[in-house]
Structure formats: structure tokens, C-alpha cells
Length: 71
Image (cartoon, rainbow, N blue to C red; front, top):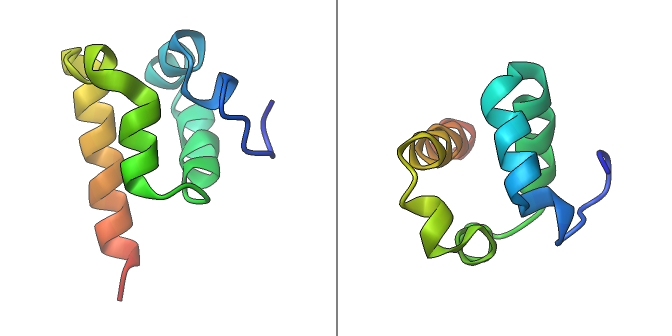
């Protein structure tokens, strides 16, 4: 569900797959992720997802985005 933080679906395999395929959806999800502390995001994604090269690249993109937003 877009627009609310949903701990189950916001970090699910299905959501991650959709984020990898659809740039606009990824940007919407990044805005939702902004409401969650980064360590919690990493925990919810899980080690197995973070080992996936495409997911790891997407998380790196998210972290770089966060760094640009932080004054």
C-alpha cells in the first residue's frame, strides 16, 4: 500500500521487484522509506536480499539520495 508505512509489504520481495522495474514506483517507495530509520530498513530488507546485486545497488542509490538531502 503506497502512502503509509507498511512493514510487511514495503520491504517484500514483490515490492523490491516492482521497485527495480518501475522508476516512478521506486521513487514513491523511497519517500515511504524516508519515514523509517536506515538501520531498520536494512534489517527489514534482510541479509539475503542485500546480497542480491540489483537490490544492493538500489539501496546504495537510496543512501546516496539520503546523503544529498541531509544538510
